[in-house]
Image (tube, rainbow, N blue to C red; front, side, top):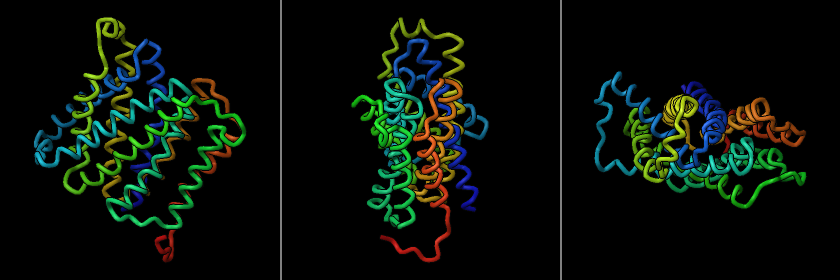
Length: 294
């Protein structure tokens, strides 16, 4: 049922909203953004391998001609998106980084129209507008409170585009493989790309401690393996454009984490923005009688 698929996607987004908790802890140990991406990939690959051993290694069988799908989900999406996202967190704030990430629905809808012929309906358009305006309010763009450097803004938009690519490559992959297979190869390819770029020298290795290990495991299992399994499962029944808007529940979680754990202020503007983003999810789930594509 689609209702279950919607819940998978919303659940995944809520877990992604917890990313900042673990990123801040690992970054405080002195690791760079790319090193954090690599640590996450290592932890995720390790966790998913244990699951594959339990489920059976037969699920690792794929056709060589399909490798491009997993290069897309693992490298072009996961590594690139995480690199940009973590840089945005460190150069701005957790809530702003999470909300700029959700320029992704616009990218997803455009690419879904081009690659899958997914209709851009009036309902989707309204939901997308609400999301954009909501992001503007939350980041303070409409009250002069936007405190972002150009690099922070570009990193945020880059994370949105990278995240959008997962929905596109993932939609191709779910037509042939299970969510477990897709998630496994996503993290294996992400690991191959992230570790060489991380520059783990002796100084970096000496920083590894229990906080680093615990944060990496939390980042890998709670904020990567489980949500990617859920989101990919949801893509089996939900259009990429719809999925990307449903996933905007993450800013609620991220903003709450920012306020409770990092003393980030809750302003009226941010509250209005969060309400608008929630409205976009409600709009998307209103049943249409016969809404023609526009």
